[in-house]
Amino acid sequence: MVKIRIIPSLLLKNKRLVKGVNFKNHLDAGDPLKTCVAHQSQFADEIILIDLDAYEKNISPNYNTIKKIAEQCFTPLTVGGNIDSFEKAIKVIRNGADKILLNSASEDKNLIKKISAYLGSQCVVIGVDIINTKNQYFIYRKGHKLEIPAEDYILKLIDQDIGEVKITFVNLEGKKRGMDLHFITKISKLINLPTIFEGGLGSLTHIIEAIQAGANSLALGSMLVFSDNNIFKIKQEIINRKFKTRLRD
Amino acid sequence: MSIAIIDYYSCNITSIYSAVYSLGAKVEVVHNPKNLKKYSKIILPGVGAAPSVMKNLHKNGYIDEIKDFNNSQKPILGICIGMQILFNKLYEKGTNQGFGFFKSDVISLKSKNMMRVNMGWKEIRKVNDLDFNSKINKKSFYFCHSFFANIIGAEEKFIKYKIEDMPSVPCIVSKDNILGFQFHPEKSQGVGLQLLENFIFKS
Image: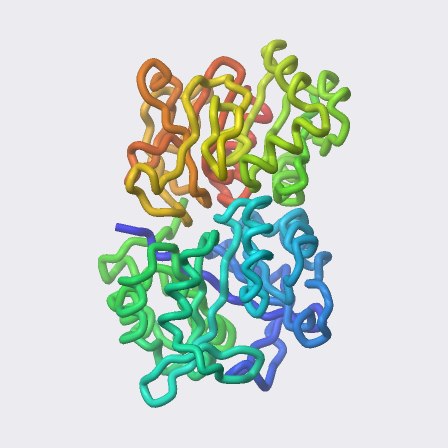
């Protein structure tokens, strides 16, 4: 049985972490380095860091913050944030990330090819934001729903030279009402790559439900920020429910 | 005693440097192959695709220098792709010639009907004794790779640990002065740092 990965998903803005609801209304959520070290001490399996400033101001991700984290936090780190060029991807890795998260740039097949050819495909994670309208799933990008069915998009995506897919349920994000279990089950059967799901988790029950539906890697935002939950408690629950996860070395 | 980390530009250089430095070692990232002989150990770090890593080592004149270093019997540690290039042929995006310190080849997980990418924490299981006696049997380490060293036949004795639930994938190999980790010790938290510490101070 695969070990379930529990992955804090952190948003960076003005050198601080923030958290919002439905990608909006950001509140301060702590210091990036201290938060990463705290998650590490609770056996976070990886950390995802997304630089919001990079998207909003159309600049490079904050390499200095990545470096500071990598200098003190020996936990796998995936970084996203307007990585739209080969040069940015290399710099993110050299500063200590292990994987890069591409989102809007993922339309550029040549860029994906070029990055994979240099860093290896295992390094490239593609973020797919999906939105559910009347039980139909579409791709969501830059604040808009696109008329692209999510399933078709994902099936084409996994044929490319990439290492992992991260699926975010946009309309569930920050709501703490649980994930879209139907979609998890459906898509997990179709994808032959590691897949991380994010959006909607608010309780231990939601986590177990998502795992039972077929997810084996979960990214957590709000659940770890504005609540009394922590990774240790989550992992203990996973073990109690007879799934596997790493709780100590 | 000082350790050289070889930089082929695709690697997560900050992470490996910081991990080794945090353990109290004298460590430098080298950019000139001619300086290699003054170090007592070298680390070939992880992250990168085989063609770009080998091309970079050729272009910057590292091939003969690393072979000389190996001939001097000083310790070499390869991590992930840094381990894979110590093998013979690498079948990642075409065919590339590795250092050939091991005669086995590096092939894709997919070609042996395993998952395309091995991502995440995996328990490792002891096959043969490692020189330094670490308490790592059944501990979990972080893996992120699509290719592996397909060691069969006479070289199987060099496999020290393999992945518990992927028994055809060796994850610690060693032969004389050479040590290779398929996982990332610099990203495997406490247990990973402990292994690095063993390489630095006990090998």
